[in-house]
Image (cartoon, rainbow, N blue to C red):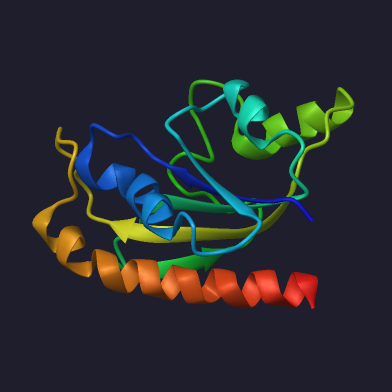
Length: 154
C-alpha cells in the first residue's frame, strides 16, 4: 500500500505552517511511507497525491476552545486551514474531481489538526510557544500515525 503523509500550510505565516514543520520532522520515520509538504490549495494538489493509496494530512486549525499546540484528529470532511478554500475548490472536491477524471487518488486515512492562535504574523519559523511544543506535537502525531499505519497493514 502506497502511503503519503502530507503536511500543509503557509511557510511565511508563522504557525500557519505548523503542518509543514511537523511533516518534515516525521520524514524517514515510517518505512515505505512518503512525506511531502505543500502550500498549494487547488488542482495542483492532484499532482502531489495522485497514485497514492492513502494519505494522512497534517494542517493547522484555529479553534478558540483549545490551547495552541493541541493535536486534534479530524474526520474526513472536517476543516483544517488548508483543506478548505474560500477562493476555489476544497481538498475533498479536488479528490473527487481526480476520481471522476480516472486519476488514482488516495483515501484520506487521517487528518491531524494542530491548534494555532488566532493570528499568524509573517515569519518563516513557528512562534516561540509552538516551537517549544513542536517535539511533543511531532511525538503525538507520530504515535497516532504509527497506530494508523499498523492497523492498515496488519
